[in-house]
Length: 427
Image 1 (cartoon, rainbow, N blue to C red):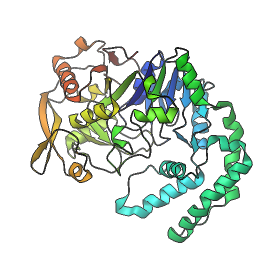
Image 2: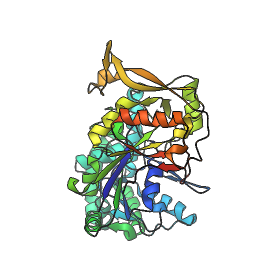
Image 3: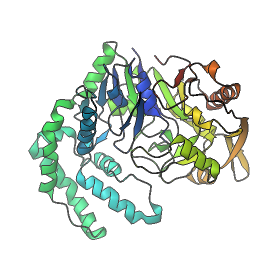
């Protein structure tokens, strides 16, 4: 049965939550495979709006089992708070599964994240300050704390001591901060153990057995392709792999089990945080996109930088992810523009470049080359089929599809769960 990967094809915030939720009724498992509570999904169900940060979007779909995989970093307080908030709103969260191999965001990871970003000053990355990067660094340095460590106090104590040996030196001698007490951290982490215990599982085994038993599994990435630690606009990236390959390592499935890779594309482009952004707008068009699109970070509350659609980025996402389909979101936001520019290539040092430059310096200096497409003024939020769209909106979608290199199989025409046109089935 299908194992599908659904991920962002730009810099994140493309509307993955809505796409995952749309598929939720046909999917048996939804698996988050990387990132942490630095990513946010907004899902609108009827007149209810849900902001999810760490939980898989499938948690809102009855009959679907949501899974937090081993590649995710977990802040226990955030997870428990999010679960409590959903329970209070009548959402059943009892089916959630949490990998025992997922790494824990500790209080000292959050502290290090915040003081390091402040210390960088003008060279700051734009981190959310939630301890994500330092937790992944601990994982790679083999001093990380995993969920399973909460159930062996002796091992937990040893690991926290090892981690704080170095971090307290940095905090006190470099950042002029107080040292963090080992016992205090251990006590705080142990307090989460029994609260998390009902959810902890061998998720690698569960997911693979589900696939063997003909269940449909959807792997949900946080952030977006251009924020991937290996394939994004380094160093202005996240600390994990939101690209399709990350689903294999972050959930524990072999690549031969992935049958479809769906990229989420916004009908324009946004970015949060620092880093190059060729099509960024600093005029009234950029402000209009931000206002009409409600472009404020779900997790950070920061205004998103806005710009026109970038086909160079879309083609790159198709290539590095092996995309089979696109889900185009927020087409309705573009209603009202007489002309809509689309970036089809870059100018770098006087030369036309149609593929994403691998050089950080070249990308930083890239200037967008635009083609202008006619806009539309008709309300499209009630459209149920592709043919219901105005001709200019249809032509815009067709042009983006041709430029991006994969078929557009669904189109978001409004924020609601039912405001979506499905052209081709994903399953």
